[in-house]
Image (cartoon, rainbow, N blue to C red; front, side, top):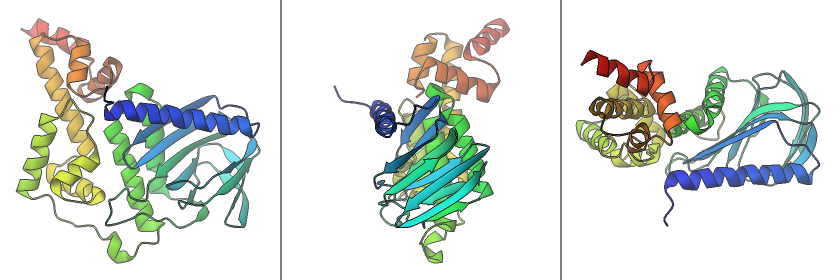
Length: 303
């Protein structure tokens, strides 16, 4: 049986969780109170809450790594490329590490953090993301994105995958602009929007594939644009980011199905691209201000 992209990502995330827990066992570090992982095209995000103090060594990662500290204060030691750095890492501070660099980490109190792994090819072949090695810094715009990512990941099965992919892409763009080896010319973004043909092609595709697990990569490919150029130009043209537009179109289709009363909530959730009925209910309530059942009851009364 062929796996869907969503099934593959769920299995990959579970595999990553198991590998991380096995690594903690290897170094005698206790398990965290909570470990949540979500993989999307171009990257992976991991939220760790209550990881006991300890010391670990990591092999070279296949992507760029951003570690965002959510603990009040974390006494942290980082070692890589023969250099060591020891500091009290404050709430909201972060460290970034290029791909292919082994590292050693030690911390002396329970750790709450968000780790974001971003592939160098996140923007496509024409523009690789190669970050510079920074041990400790603060970037308030990136911090805001990290907190949003954490809140979305905390929704667990209700997390909006396209939204998470959009947030990771936004982090990647900020890292490209501020913390990478790219030249100013490589960072230039077009100020215009999508052409009429590009917009029609993308919007028609979205409408025909609302039941699928859409990704930014495939939408950008339809427009013939790199991923971060597409996201910027789509918002300029349509007035909303891709993930928001897709969510609103899914909700509108769900409304029509609720009006007809011909399908169950489970059937509606699956046919409009939501991973489960609970995901559908959460997203619908976020957009409409009422649950699907409440919306259906109100519609029945008004008829």
